[in-house]
Length: 404
Image (cartoon, rainbow, N blue to C red; front, side, top):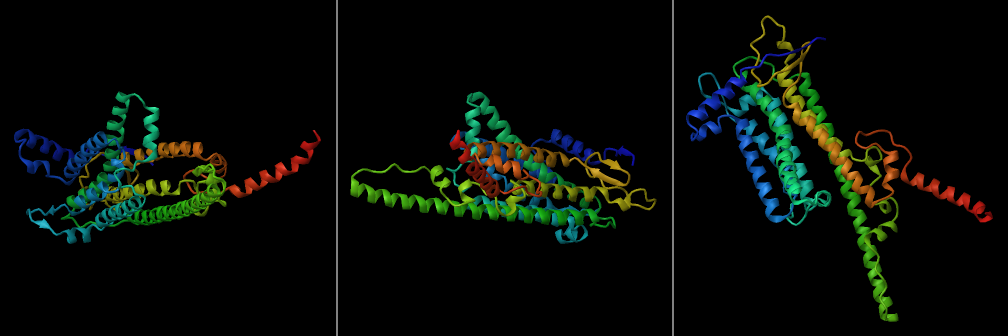
């Protein structure tokens, strides 16, 4: 099918009108909030400056992590609740807008649900404790010791880039959905298509996937640390008894040494059971794939394939971008940039996480050889099977070695 580029819609005329209004009266605050996308921009600027200031004053670089699950939910709420006016200037009720364009509450509601779940998961791991910091930032400081370079990295990447990215993946597709609703509020349009159904089913699947992965990881880590704590307490008791009888204190084991004595799979230090037999980072995969589902709501708002090439079709909505058209489908819009960048970010984050895990747990190399990194796939031999084969192989060699 031939590919063409759609003409720039009239949204950019609205942007130019806003710029002209700001030039004429830069102190009129109403102009700064004349559009829900602008509102989210100002809110994100506040998040960026606040996180940068906090990380500079506290030396803790996980402030962006604490905002990561909250800001998209706020952006979604702002856009899905922002008033839409009819031709006579009267505000249309939110429920009336939602009933005509159900993808708006679906997309926004899913983002809010995502934010609530991720905030809860982050909170139970003490993520909101101001003393806690993601171990990867500590590692980054070791590889960027120069204070000037670190300042650039922390300001441009940690604060600005990451918070801009979270705005791109949430506010932009939501705005496209809202804009379609605004521009067709007086037009008899169908507010739900097969792409909306695909987006809804996809989000539900990946949302459930991430929940299962996070819950299994949480259960594994809790059990592992419970075993470690019990082993340390048992060792402390034995050391106390030994010291009272012999007068000399026995050297205490490190956590790594304790982990090695635990039963499998806890002795590996990382989970290889449940969903982690099929993907080493299923939660990462579910996370960025959910945002592809959110992006699909914007695609659904922009394609409305029954409008195209119809002599009686109403005028196209002004959705605020150039659209790449393949045959009858509007497939690509400007909000895809955020989803693509998020996918790339997770590739880098996964690589760094694996690098640090491999340094801590040498057996992780075997796990990498048998299990898919992100996309769930048929697993190879389990770590237990590989270790058993290695033990049997070494045992078979021992008699021959004795003859050398």
